[in-house]
Image (cartoon, rainbow, N blue to C red; front, side, top):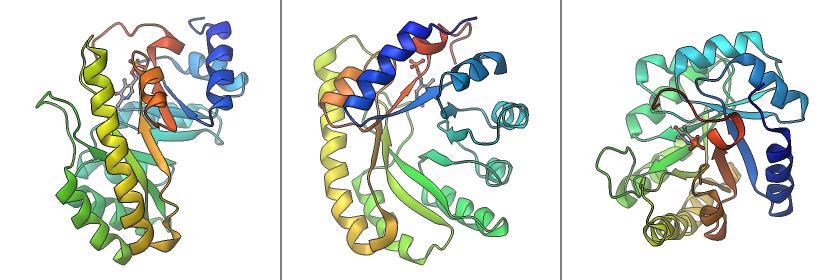
Length: 226
Ligand SMILES: *Cc1c(COP(=O)(O)O)cnc(C)c1O
């Protein structure tokens, strides 16, 4: 089996002591690996391909909390709304409205995180401050989504100072948005900051993350660059 149990237990213990939620990123990995981590007590899993997630969900225990962490196309939202626990990568108002619409059809209120563009790389997706403010103004009218916080990805670089400063900027924005969203939608419990992956989660936690998305460190390297 690919899971390193010792590594998992050390990570979990460390994160628990810091009140950080672990989302185990299982994309491209077989259901047997997910089951193994589940048997060790892990319940939050992250996937970023819709079809793959739908197939895995059907084969695994129903109490898994599935986090969708990838770039979501509007036409695929309805495949996730019946079961998804949280959608991390909401990067447009259009997508948020579509999630709200599809969630209403299945009578659910779906927790989402707004993705912020913090990296230098142009290829990464995400909203800027102005777009976040616009969304804060419309969410009180949306009955079937609840904005729980922000998500971001730092640049893919060895330069730790740059990664740290990108996370720091996201935390500052998160603090601002906590005030704005809590004022506009008092029931929202805006409280999640999803930042940090295998290579940079220590830095992310030092900069205020309370939810990390860790894949390769738990499941081993992925064969394809996905
Ligand atoms: C793949 C992925 C991760 C996990 O990456 P690792 O480097 O394997 O920990 C985290 N977040 C997102 C959005 C991803 O696509």
